[in-house]
Image 1 (tube, rainbow, N blue to C red):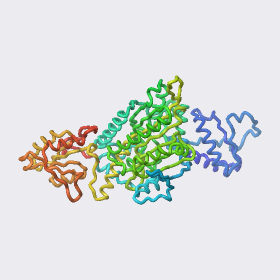
Image 2 (image 1 turned 90 degrees about the horizontal axis):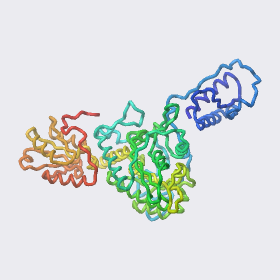
Image 3 (image 1 turned 90 degrees about the vertical axis):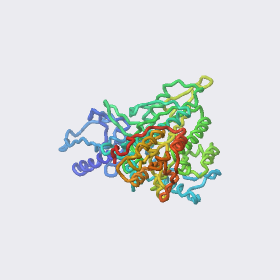
Image 4 (image 1 turned 180 degrees about the vertical axis):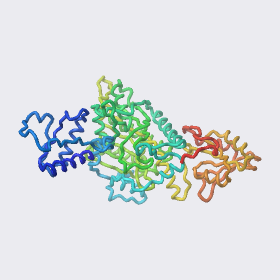
Length: 573
């Protein structure tokens, strides 16, 4: 609305104060510009001006071509040259707000808790005893306040661990990732891709930007609750994608699809997706403007097949979250649906709750505001009580019609599929945020913070006690099939051990005279240690290698992202 405020303030001063008139005509005179806006933007601006001026003026909003139907009786005015070109401030044109965002702000919901026994209880009647995190989540969702009032702990951690940082030369919400962060992010990306492809999805790649005035895409934008970046090119307006929906649906439109191919899955890891999130909501890795979104869409023959696939993907997301390092107790489940869908599918919705074996937050809409009738999210509640959605699946009942997507049924007739939208993990950056916030909660509880072994940038650190032990340290490192480094710095052993602890390294191996003589290792196991009592185990290289192989089974692997020798590494922060 910033553009409208600029116009109305100008009119109030110029017209009311200087000219002393009380009537205003708003007219879209196309010949005043060589670079016209779209019809929708013009109408929106004119309506906004009418609303803003209505309290102080008699306003008439005239239709296009109106001037041809009247005759000017006054040929001039002392201030007839008082014309102005009024432009918004430079940042206004960067954001496009969809009708769905406005609908979401107006939407009225009914909130409940659904328990595993099928009881649907209103929030103010639910007993939250033993469900403190769920209470925090419910309060957060109902309040709809997303503003950042304090810096969450993961921001300091992401910098200290040299994972990620803000990039001052870019727009807000666009991050830089250091080698350790790129490794962590890349492993998560690879794993989520493996899960999606393992579920039968076909991987595709689609453009980053789309025509704002494409008739089909414009309608979809107004049904998706997101703010978009917009850019101009060759007198055309484009928006940057916020998901892979656009490209995949346009591809589906051009395909010939048989019922035999259903359910049909397509997947893309969008690096990047973009949303013009409000600046007051941006913080760390929790809410970004540029992010990596795994996006899978499934075409289903009918609602029964869609519900079956929805449940399969629900369980897939639970398994994926656990592998990433987030168990069911680490997040809260939200299920959102229309009242009609609930009445028709109550048993299925209770089944979702039975699967996680704990109450879930339910949002019910009396009417459908968006393109979906059902969605779930797994929401991580951070140290400040803020919630962020991770895994999600939606049942879409609109876009097959909107994009003219069809399949040929057994009788040769063209049918519209039901579409599932699935992000198996949510934004990859948010997964890192959740892991760091979980680690901070462990610290606050008197435990040692850790990352999952397969995601740790350095999995094993070897510390030689003296220079004479370096050769043995190097031979140990060479025999381990993991990300192993050697702390060869000119520092005390105690300092090296403390630094390894600050990096959350899972296994710290100290080698001295006794280890060289006995060809053994003294290993500190972080996950079995406490802040005051480290767990030290004497083992052989072969025994440690077996532990590593077992822990890496079924997990993607990437090599060490930095120099093997700690003394040769640069500092990023």
